[in-house]
Image (cartoon, rainbow, N blue to C red; front, side, top):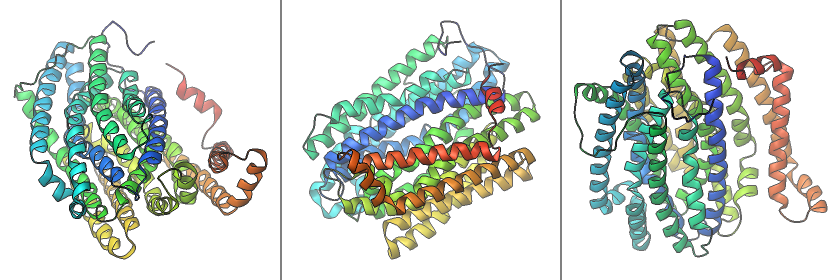
Length: 536
């Protein structure tokens, strides 16, 4: 059955097989997007570099600024509140009532983000001074960061509309368009940056590319929701109806939780702005550790929230438990190999992929030092995305807010303290430690409230997956130790692109070993895999 059809979609039943299929759809397109993003970053880092000029830090500031507000007001809080509410109205009152809720919600979100964008544009010099105080000592860099950020800031309302319309599609059981849309950003930016050779011109081209991509993405999502039969028009005049008031009440705790999380980002940016090149180092490390988060955590979380919402609405507790069990094992099976690579071979990865052009060996060493400590936090980053829907599906947004505040406290306490002793890697340690504190608190709350518990089946599967992950990590660490020997053998056959071929070969060898260990330990059985993927 195609994902987009002319006939209006009916809400699908909450089945674990549907969760896996929808997660695979999201993961497939996220994988394409992430690899395109990696290609984009390889091109951008080669042209912009990191510590060698002012363009790189200024550009990464412009890229992160609208995303910071987007995660607070759009994708995180509002979507987490909107999807369960829209799903409930869709099931209980029908499509017309659900679409009316979506229209009012879209108008409210569009108006709020437009006002926020306008305020940010007018106050950008003062905001930049607060968020990146280290730039103020370099007036040229400070001015460039302001100009580029003013170019990219209108990306925020575009992404707010994208997030809401993606929620409409996902609640109706349609995932392909919303999953494919992120590839647009990477494609447009690659087209914009590829012809550039001057770092300054490339920074401007990339910033304009962000804005153009946002407009295209919003247009594609609007086309997608119309194709599935959702009658949602674009309006910028909000109507604060009783349903919207309820939605805002649900969204406020989520916004506070997201804001608390973004405080961690804010603090990291403030401290890193004082170190030339640090913003670029953290961005490159962010690209690699966010790969499993986007590919696994977000993809499964997007499919999990509508499935859980339907199960909760139907009071099907067994289905909710099984759905969470499948999401946990599936997510960790895909996450642990990435974590193993980031922890075992961080410098091998960065040097093999990024060291070229303006990005030098010093930049690679500093980036790898941060990446190592992000690596052991990756499972926690993904688990946060898996466990949060268990609260949101029950319209409980206060729990994640409280846990996020603890996350911030741990992050700030460790990150700020360690930054003064070991520099930029200390910020990564704080981020990972805070994420694990958040996960532990969510697990305790879920078990105490009897919303979900780790079943014997899940515990056994998780143990087997961890054994396979440890085996892969040991293999990769051994390959890193013998890296000169590996590259020498490759150089005899192919003298060009030696380090790139070496890292790709080692990663694929480790991945094949991991897959083999999954079957050896019994974590994955071929008959189970076929059963999960079979349409019912």
